[in-house]
Amino acid sequence: MEYDVIIVGSGPAGYVASIRAGQVGLKTAIIEKQDIGGMCLNWGCIPSKAIIESAKYYDRLREADDFGIDGIDMKKISFNWQNAKKRAMRIAKKLTGGVEYLLKKNGVEVIRGEARITGPNSVTVENRSIDATHIIIATGSYPRSLEFDIPQERVIELEHMYGEDKLPESVAVVGQGPVAVEMAQFFQMIDKKVTLVTPSKTLVPFADQFLNDYIYNRLKKDKVEMLFGDDIQGYENGKLKVQGKEIEAEKVLNASMRGAVLPPMDIDVQLEAGFAQTDEYLKTNHDSIYAVGDVNGKSYLAHAGSAQGLFVINNIKGIKGEMNLHNYPLNIYTNPEMAQIGLTEEELQSESIDYKVNEFPLSANGKALIEGYKDGSIRMLSEKKYGEVLGVQIIAPHATDMIAEASAFMQIESTIYDVARSIHAHPTISEIFMEAGFDAVDKAIHK
Image 1 (tube, one colour):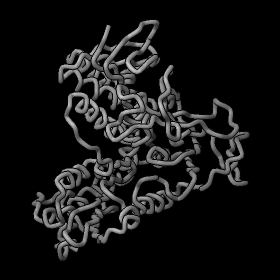
Image 2: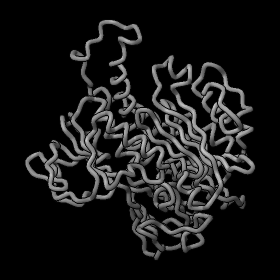
Image 3: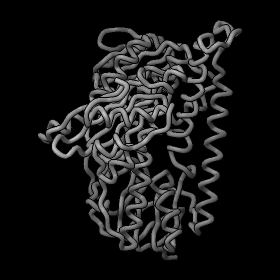
């Protein structure tokens, strides 16, 4: 059978591309060897944020007395891992079921099994040969293996975390990036002894140094031990040996940076640092084969993968465009959340752009104080001559939602004057946008 499009992998890049392809009338098949929804819906983005939310809920109970609620004794309250993970998996199952429904609704054939790309226009799966005008590789990525000796039963891989009957009392989180800092905070919030072992003080690569400095100081304040460097000698008798020190750790959580997961192929698809190499249209070295999402190494963000999937389908339908990954938000689900969009200060400096920085703190925002949050701020980077907003960073309880406003005004190349003129309801935390705009134009009202 011949298709217009075959998509290999059903994570956010693959399933979004499939649904859109079906919507625009392309005969489409999606091949998945495990679960519809990929890493993100089944064991990554969705369930991990669900258990983090449970931990935040538990952690906030410590402030109940200040909110006028008596009778909560933290000594008598404990975090129920079984119930937290059941809730997480219930949410994941609901969403994966929704994706399966949408694939069916839009006429996308779901083929189960492992795909093998046998030619520029052909794939085999379970001894079945399938031809297509276009093939989209959307097989994602996976945390790289730990590079030191440790018994496998002592390692928690994120994929298998929800199969753990109970959580360790002490844990070492080894890795770098959003997942590493999120999981370090998760264990800290539920009263576990946690050590973060990470290559450098740049805890989140690609994030502005402002955000990196903040999360470093926050983890330090929360008494999360941090060890920097790759010198891990091994593991023995419940202790992780790092830089000549022995760290108590019943288990080690692997939060390593991820590498591409590539399908078996009988043709040569060019790679770069292990990822599928693509051009500005996300084509590989074969005109009929595209690579979207984590597998091409351009971004590890689920929403970037989805956007790439849509971009490719548009390209196949003859709708040309361009991708600007700087205008995709970077969300970090720490406590409080952090988010950024646009250029970082380091990038502005490297490009010799004349810019200015304006900030406004949550501690001067009424809604933040009402909700019991004062730790955080907004930071706006703008071009000096015309005032175009070039980058935004937010530290706030709902920063990952609030960054969408920055995405909207940066999409239309708004200036600091546009931001200052945007009326925000009072009291809301979103008022910090207006304040940062005023601060950039002249002076913030409440600063």
